Image (cartoon, rainbow, N blue to C red; front, top):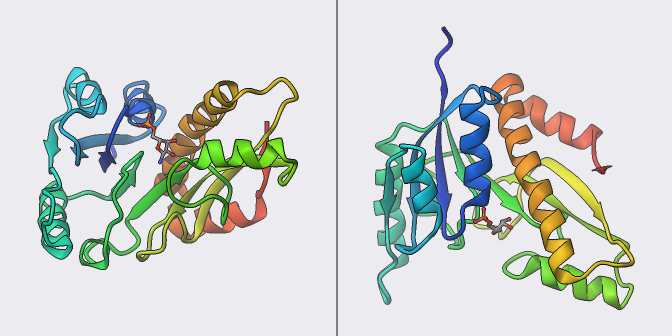
Length: 213
Ligand code: GRF
């Protein structure tokens, strides 16, 4: 039997995307195993999801005024100890410095609830909704990208999906569709990375841009 791909999933909150990955692994849709969940928040609900799935988790709390490079070095050591093939930032809400990233070249991927180049940082969905309300943008979307450096929500595209606005949309209904799309494209992207490798996944993302549903 082929060895399962080792995933370390990093979270800061609810962990619904973590759940999508756990479910896909359990259902045999992903030939992968979540070897640990890392959270920077002790009260992240995703830690319960990890526990319920029998997956170990480690909380690495940020201590105020702590040196950033020291935190990232410690974090990198913990992550490396689980020998990941891929590190998935699934709602990880802390910027990672090069101290961390240089240790895992071509191994870190991030999910962003907007299209490439749009609304980097926090509150992306509500910022997209506000932009749509004044007809600044025709649609929004979700993306998964590689994290090569310290750029915020930026890096080689691995997958994206357009999400059209609906006339009857409220922020809540938009959020629900964005999250549902995230759950799908995150699993789809990890699947492609495992089956096709990084280069082909990037190539496919270029040629299959803007699949909407
Ligand atoms: C997602 O929208 C992700 O794109 C963003 O934070 C949210 C995390 O959701 N960075 P969850 O914790 O996976 O439910």
